[in-house]
Length: 280
Image (cartoon, rainbow, N blue to C red; front, side, top):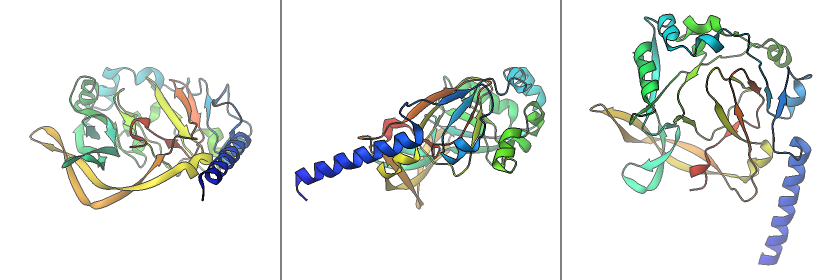
């Protein structure tokens, strides 16, 4: 195919992509901010369209209680939790290959299990100045397991979401971390609702209309292990992961912050990505 035909095809594809995107998401790269639950919610769910509900969780005791370290220590006294550790705050992400700096590998966090909560909280607080970045998290409904002592401070489910989706949530998870922790580019196969109790969570989303601009590469899997009290990247070649990365010639992400008392829902395929290494 000659260069002229390639350019014509590229222009037509770009026009088609833009038209489909505008039909699904509109022409403004912004997220709807609502004063109450969307009616009907299915208009957002069916279109995989995100939204933010202002002051959605003002009635939660968690908003005032979970910002107090002393309250958390008392409530979680005698409890043990899982702590995830990385050198730079990036878990399940691409890192430099430990034996070949010119290559990349897929790195997982080192996980300490059974850590007393008070020690775990100290590790998170110290992450701002420590060589290791810690965050507390465990999937599979950890608010009712590891953090069950705090479960009464927040709603177990969001009534209007349960009604609209036809079922209660499969899992309610709690994440505790600082500003150095980042969620890497990924896709969730769920309808997610996020509620921020303290601080700010920053989202960068890619809509389903951009899926054709992603490509897959294979990387060796690695994990962080503690050696003499320090984190060291240890390569595990027996596992591989496919990672999708964005080709940014056409992509237009939608970016928005979620603040305390806001509730955020919907997914643009819930593609959250870190642009720094998105196109190595």
